[in-house]
Image (tube, rainbow, N blue to C red):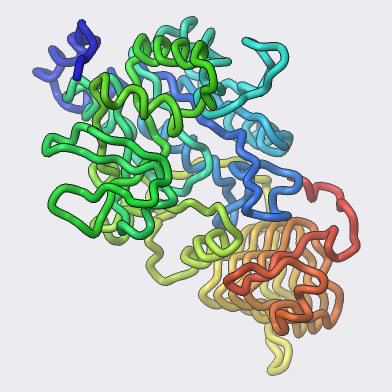
Length: 443
């Protein structure tokens, strides 16, 4: 298996005589991150009718992409490009509002990279590799030592600096972050076969018969969609792939299978760079790509001790948030008491003589008297009328739930008007309620 003729890591290898922290900070400062945020997110159904998956609200005040962006910033990687394509308006607006604090005087930035047909004037981004290839001039302009390519639609906390150190220490051309999953679940991922040193010797995309981890016949290593490349090596591979007839221009389908037998590719265990969590033996990583997965991941946040720690000041999740008054709970009569239990309630909410249990309410949600909300995710600006009943629902932005309406009580009734997931979660949008596009809904 041939490898690159000259080690690009020599300056960093020599730095290992210094402290590990300085070694890693040198690596992160000389890394360019490209976040792939152009996915359609069709499995989230009507929740992504007017927004891309990375722009979907999550955990009461964030957007999904905030987790990847925060990982970059907290890791010390502050040259960041965000490749957008489908339904990107709300994502672009969110980044402009909430992520403009990086200082260009220190060569720190978040650069939006919309599909602009920069290489081929007849094509938008054709695949994950093509999204990077069409922005190759940015990589040449900044000439980083390494490029981090990462999906912008997963929920997790990870120190990319540790992965960079692992990459350099193994003299790798490419490193793939991976999670340990049951063999039966691995069919939904790109799966790596590795040798005893962690070098990738096989890579297959969504295989019917996934290779197992050596010594663990019931487990497999699945790709997280987080890649580190030596920059010169990546540019060579992108240009080679662009000249290859029939390529789908995708990292998982084309780039990685080609380079694994020819170059030095290593697997990096997520457990070695995961930040926080209540159980580090099971590092927290979620693909909230379906309504059921999205609902469940939000519901996890309402537990007494969630697996994902949002209260960690050492690794904060940054975002844009409007200036809102505190949440308000009013009325304390026996039959009309405003309260919430086992729930997350964002600023600007008013719980007026209503009951909220095991739910997550985003900003400016009003729940009126005698209404009941349980086991539900309520996005910003929703108004729940008096005596309404909401059970196991995801309610999209700016919906106005009429007085007395019951949702999530009878699935057969719900299916006539709303979307009911395989897991029995009811998705409600303003369009389904016949309310059209309320101001500010599509964001």
